[in-house]
Image: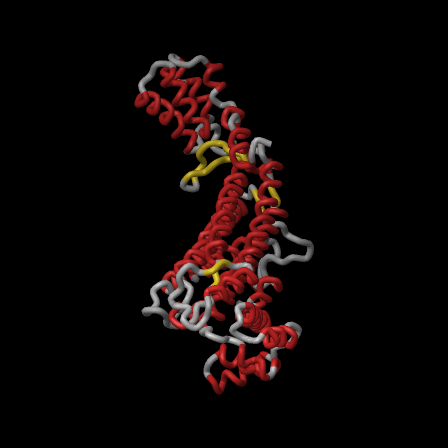
Length: 435
């Protein structure tokens, strides 16, 4: 997590100050729950809240204590006792460190998920707006990087919209799956703490009780969360790669916005490079890189070990902060994307009508020729055009075997661009709804 690729709201979730504030709330709510069932004095629980609610936890002081204790939760509890006073002896009754750490992590992940879901909403809004703007803007579809048949630029963006809409659904599900709380004590048996405490803390923290925890919350939940982030990153890279290809000089159908005063190269003043989408591509690699460690965290020893702990201290902040930044950047790219319909039409026409070859093939088969003979005739006339030797429509009209099956006007009809766009409304209604 570095400032260059961080946004303040997401980064704040992972700050030491935020972490210690969440730890306090978990401990204070647990103390209140213990007071409610008569295990600790109500006055003690009230004092914890009164003295801790507005307290500023001294990160340097906690770090200094941890340097001696070699235990972060004990260091925090020691510092909390310095603030609260004698009543602090009733804090952490029957709890274990994992109760605090795991519940806190899940609070942080759900808060991070809420930001990421909002990020996806913003990206979806930008994609939808630009998709409808270019709903019927014809462009060439490519397979293997080679001209195939006409599509519209709006369809390209509608595809991306549908993909990120699925991404949002997955993230909502992953957020729900990771939003659990464990206040179950050593090895998760509730031997020294009543299950009602867990239920109370979970409700207060916006979580649900973990059905069965060993001493830690099972890490398959977290693996799914980070895997979901990885899939979102891959979808972003797909869209970023499309923009990068379209911005190539030989294509130049779309281009990242280039602001006044922006410089593309330290050496070549003419350059306008797709630096934002290249950056997104790199950030996507990083987010995906955090998935494997999350998967490997699932297998812990017996009821608990801490091999997952160091991993999560890194991947929790880094994956969410990086994805947040990348999503915001992607939204900006789409929102300001420069789109060149005239160049799209020029590229459509570049192969002299070859993009209509399939329709000619189908017309010949419907005219009575076998598919094999139809393919042979179309390809025979297509290959010279591919080499720059003539126009596809002209060659077809001059081929005696073709005109023996199709009249000139039937051949011309096969070159109607609108034919390829007749179901755009159907696709849009599937993606965006009938409205």
